[in-house]
Image (cartoon, rainbow, N blue to C red; front, side, top):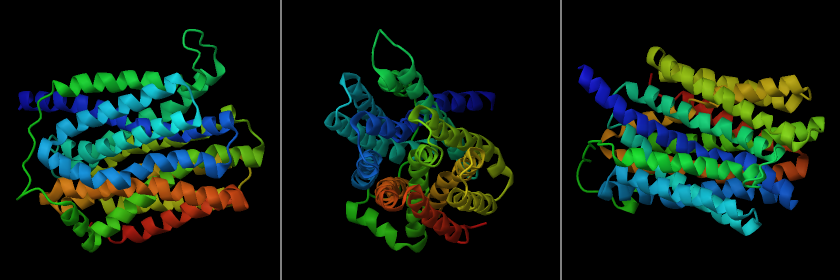
Length: 388
């Protein structure tokens, strides 16, 4: 029994390091703000960067599910880490508009591959009722990378680094080194993967699963989750800059604050979900976000804005894990296909920032908050469809 636990732990460590690498995608929020400042872009232009990252989830998620059925989940994760490493290397050579577009595109492609394959890979190590809490712990590890990104960027922007002279872009090579370590560790880890039922599904058969009402509802739920996530991480500094006249380096703390609370929520959620039903915890989380959105419409006080950002971070921290695990448990024999569809829902990270950019250009950051509120209201509706 002890050997079995040690074996599982030895497999979990490299997988959790991959979850950390999965969090690299969230650097796009703070990076887009720095690129906006460096190149003098409008909100709509700057929001193209996070939108572009998540656009690739629409294109690559379902094909990745099909690829996993052929080459396996572990090899797909390794491929994703290679693409991610390449994306993090490019900004070392500059931050021109075209170079950053290519870098963020590769980051999105690598993350689409990783998010589609890593979650089902974890389900080969942790099974049954513990899957939701384990996915949440993975999100906790991912969130550590997310909230460290603004700090590393701020450190690079405000400190003289004569060896590299990269400024805020020092973030990219630091994270690239971690990605390379993850490749090396996962490559030597043996993980026995469950065989899927029947033949691998075709592209059309994967998309046909959206015809099942609960899978479709879960897909839209993932879209709203990531839209709120990317939206808050991009918009929070802009709210402080617009309402309080703060500079970007100071306002960037709002992004870190969001991820600090999201990290804490993931950590606590991994324990709470073992004691409380997913439906109850999900409902509480959504109500917290709804209160926070109302606050962001009303408040112009720094402390209260920070409280609202923290509530969104904590509330949104477990949404992905609950929705994803509910979808996997609904169709356990089609894990690769369901995973591909759910990760395709991260396309919400394209839809929401584009809509928020247009809304904020028209009516300030309150317009961006209004777009996110629509997503929160949908998640409130989804709460009543979750099994107890």
